[in-house]
Length: 136
Image 1 (cartoon, rainbow, N blue to C red):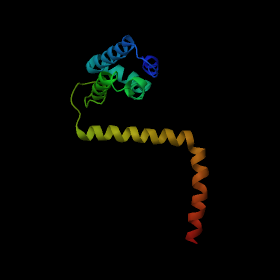
Image 2: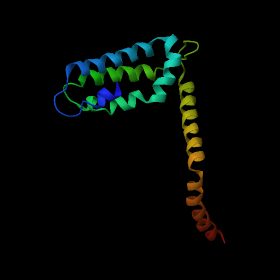
Image 3: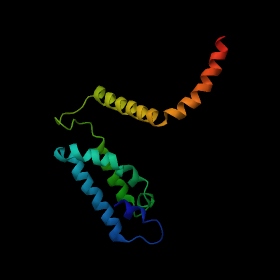
Image 4: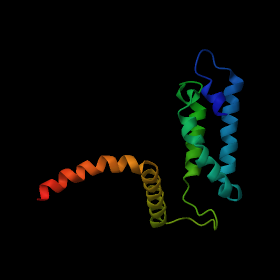
């Protein structure tokens, strides 16, 4: 689907390709909106970055042909970030959603530090030397 959406950049757009992309997003919405499939599908949806890549696709940038496609992506984004516990089906509180957000940010920071720790140390060490020279 992403190849088809990205390939709609130049010239005339074939109606069947646009309809294919729209129907595929409808399928994703159906999978995301059902609690039984949502548990497993959220992992696939987030891991493959379908929503982000679709919003950056050529079809989403087209004014006339991409209108319905963009609307369907908005609906998919709504269901993807719906504040519901996948295991119990109960609504999540604001404090639970805040804790989940902070956990994701912390995880990102840890992964970034582990991946780029040698670059961070090289950049912060001279700053530390500069700061310590002011302490004397």
